[in-house]
Amino acid sequence: MPASRAQRAFTAQRRARCLQMRLAGVGWDQIVDLLEYSNKGAACKDFTRAMDAARAAQQETAEELRALELLRYDRLTAAVWPSASKGEVKSVRAALDISRERVRLLGLDAAQRSLDNAVDAWIDHLAGAGEGLSDDDAAALAAVV
Image (tube, rainbow, N blue to C red; front, side):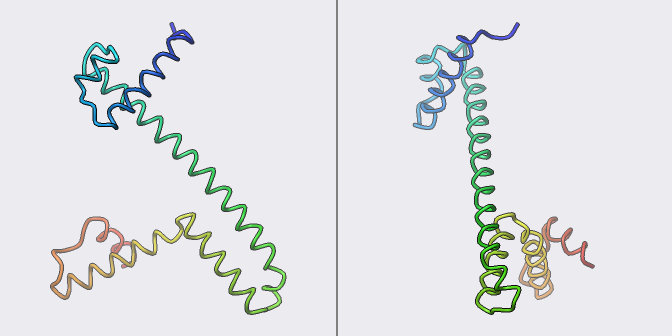
């Protein structure tokens, strides 16, 4: 049987207090006593669930901000596109800058950075400066060889 609305509210409030207390440096024993948990494991489980919920909310907020920024980039691109497509140099530069920011925001440049890091590590390795390639760098280098 699902928990009642009142029980869910109590649990949410206790989790929030547990999270606040733990982040403030309060020890598990004191949290268990003050919030009347049955044991440290229950308090820790609530803390973990509260952290997971906070992370999910933060991720959702970040995605909303990312979507808003993409809409702004769309509007900026639309504003400079007519003159950029006619070859006006300042507008072309502005359109390219907007495009670079869009690529950075979406993380589309991550693959290139990974490859650049792998190549740099390989060069260091060949020069004797490194201990060897990491698994990630070796995989990235193998993908292009």
